[in-house]
Image 1 (tube, rainbow, N blue to C red):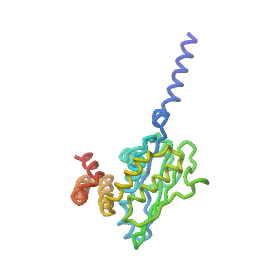
Image 2 (image 1 turned 60 degrees about the horizontal axis):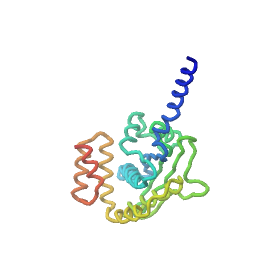
Image 3 (image 1 turned 90 degrees about the horizontal axis):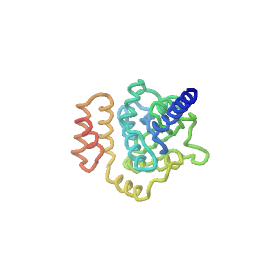
Length: 239
């Protein structure tokens, strides 16, 4: 009888230990990307560029998800947690907040950041990544100090590709297959900033619960930029 009880206790302990590993995608490193904070100083710029917070998040998730050696959490799943925890308007660059969300999602790495666009169309995106296990900043670090990208906002998709590469290296994640990286660079050249801006507004409307407005914005994006696949995917979710 004592043997049975001990075996049951060991089995329970094994399940308890293995559960977090299962939640975090087994052996694959798991990553979640939070909305990026708009650092614009002027009120008008804050309002005009606010939707890009969602756009950067969404496109960076897509960029990092091309790495088949990791698992990246879908944006909708992250937004659900933010809504449930009343954190949609919180400072998501705060380590404690980012790590809290990471634990709820069951991931290894949390990515947050800020962005700014000046009056001349110059854009800078600064990222930061946290370890959910230790709560420490993993990137930037002494070896990989540069966690930012800069350039013209017209080259938005190229900036996202660059940022994804820096995060992948900074977090010491498995390498992205070369052929995938080249394909992404070519695709990036075909998506203009205007498409990103319109699509981002659709994401913001969706997250705010304005379904009709989101549908209208996604349809408008598709009409103007038929080769852009992202709004098509979002529209399917809402119909």
